[in-house]
Length: 296
Ligand SMILES: NC(=O)c1ccc[n+]([C@@H]2O[C@H](COP(=O)([O-])OP(=O)(O)OC[C@H]3O[C@@H](n4cnc5c(N)ncnc54)[C@H](OP(=O)(O)O)[C@@H]3O)[C@@H](O)[C@H]2O)c1
Image (cartoon, rainbow, N blue to C red; front, side):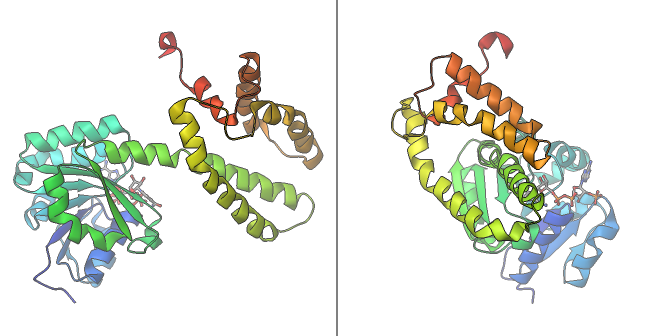
């Protein structure tokens, strides 16, 4: 049921994530306007109570808060550019992925149109929008965040205001998200190792979950070592990981798996040992990640 007392919102981009955002606003009673480049994709939202606008200028005019959830910052800019003047006095909130520099460019463009800007990131899948496990990060003008926090809160379990710089959400999203693909690949590889023996992936889920909890518990210690550049406390050395390279390669042969994605990690370990870091904690690998100034 739409509640006219609640802030009107406009959602631009009703793909998988944008649709979930619009559904969460509708479920919380916000008058919700939607626009999508391909209009047919917004149809299910109309059935759920949203007002669809075919012209993006009309969609912007409908609300003080404009949530953009297109694939990239560039797509958002290109869609809004012809109607930028209409953003004046409104708040543009982005919830797409992208690089910090692209977030900054869009923030500057929005400021030039007289709009306030909140660069956001949503850390979960569309089916989890509005649920406690979904966190949203924001960077940008604090007054805009404070004014719209109550409205944005319907999208997840917690909102985090990171600071005034408009690219902070993109920065933290990239930094936190860096774990995702390597961690998932590790899980898939584990599943393939078991499958090669006729065992189901589900049989390892309890052990994998425990393993991830163990890694979680070590994050503060590792972060302390990294921040202090003191790689002596963890008790898990580069030499230990280096010694396991041969077993790792053997496992690939025995299981009949392509484990070539390990090669760059093995290379890092070998370079760290050659650099005299064998007895340092595994966290010291961070020292090898920064490219020499000449290669940047
Ligand atoms: N899905 C997830 O699990 C997830 C989780 C966290 C964050 N995100 C982020 O959310 C953003 C949207 O993801 P999604 O899953 O909703 O993707 P999606 O289902 O592929 O939808 C993409 C949306 O962007 C629009 N779009 C793309 N290029 C455009 C352009 N040049 N001009 C105008 N509109 C354009 C599409 O419009 P059309 O329908 O016309 O193509 C559609 O509305 C991405 O940045 C993604 O990284 C997604």
